[in-house]
Amino acid sequence: MRAELCFGFSSTDWENLVQRLDHDEGAWAQGIGVFERRMKERFFTCIDALVEADTKPDLKASGSLSEAHCIPGFSIMALCCLLVETLQRFQESPASTASAGPCTYPKGPCIKPAADTTGQFIKFLRRPAFGGAFVDDKVAKSFVRGVRNGILHEAETRKWVIWREEPNEIVEPLEDGYALNRTMFYEAIKKEFASYLKDLHDPSSKLRGRFKKKMNDICGYSGEGERSFQWQAERHSGAKVNSSRSEATLA
Image (cartoon, rainbow, N blue to C red):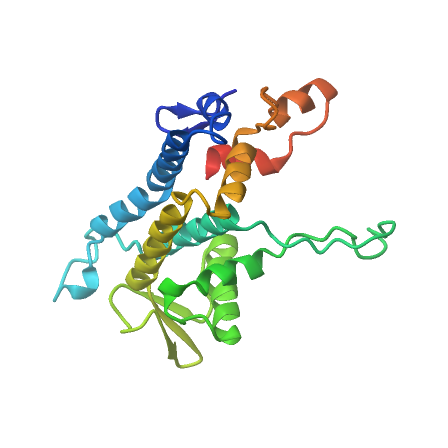
């Protein structure tokens, strides 16, 4: 089973390419280009299409209730949240909070609790392009609960409204919650993406190690010069396929 990293470039192609990264800067340029295409095909192009499809019924003086409309703010933010998760994982792995000793689960706490994905998400929101909109812990945690978790887990936002062109900042308090300018939010993500690509093109960037590992993980490649897809090993052992490999086809 081959995973397509982007259109026309498979996991097998990556396995061949990754072996040249240590000594070939041209291979790095190609690999970064593959990643850029992957992100655009799976996220940016989709978001741009939704933006273009917006029928903006709120700007029309009148209209029939039976008229079909596209109101994509909700879907745009769902994709934006997935994009934030993906870009942050490429730059930094979730912090491990595992403790030593025998595991007491299910009678007690697990010594290997789930990774702190909330903390990682907030770290991305505090990158320069967001202009300090999420520096306040209350705002950042409310966004995670009300937008990221609300949309992805319950298909609703909690105490957040998503607007196209308002407010004048990315985030603004509104009654007992907040208003989000989804256009400005998306623009901030695009700026951070461009900044990340620029860093990857720097041969001295420490981000390259994490990038290489993440791409290898998506492909199920061990980095030892041979195919080592987890699903192959588990198929022979009879074990269940690990769900972490789903990013190869879903992200």
